[in-house]
Image (cartoon, rainbow, N blue to C red; front, side):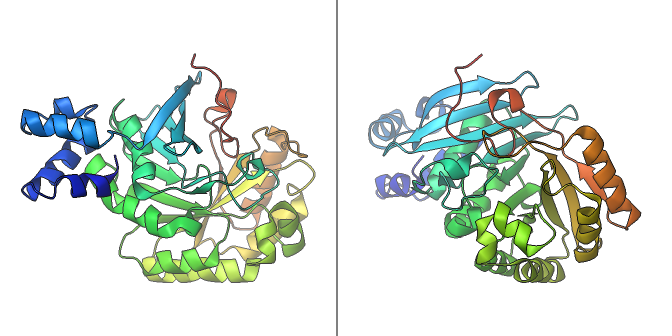
Length: 328
């Protein structure tokens, strides 16, 4: 819900009323009618004047592994997608969007092919979370959906401050960036122990610029320096995301280069099987990924291979493009 509109609507009410409404919403209430400690007349007023969500659910898709992808429209018609991932160990993690579309055109990412809309407000980001909280309790969150979170950091951080009320602690919240250095520096100065993830995808500048044009603005040296300053202040490892592209960035020499530029004390590496997005790339084979991982570890850098979730509904990493199929 639009929390600013809520507070304005409740200006003539005791200060605790807005807190009551938020408490109900953050714990999964699906309507004002469920908020039984609010007077009936006030519930009716809120229902009339403050839409329960800033987003309209267009449709959901359900994957065979339990992943759920939701397509929303904002009140001005912008497309937004978010994903709920369910894991066997009981974790319930949400991947949320911070922008409609993305202004940064990473060549492997479906979102980068969309026309950029705008930054999302904090309420629009929160409403992605609240949608899934109404389905079941959630405990992890990543800003890894549509958009570059560091380009909308004020609203992202405002969202983060409310997440513990929903059940997601700051230590279980992560922000993924393609290397937007001003945002990394600002995140470093915050008081919240939020995790940082960097989309790297290449061990040297020429190839990274080819894959991710943002590297022309903030090159590897500058990006890694910002990440290392984050580690020095926060003492929290930085997660490196490395999508595996056949014949592009998955060779032995590239694994060696990667091990040479990443300090294993500071970085934890996630190798990501490429998810099809109608791009120019093919994904590395499982044997190539295993060989790349072995080469990294041979040179002292630990790596894990990310478990792919929701690929059959285009909900996996890099696939969000507002083309959700009809619900299963």
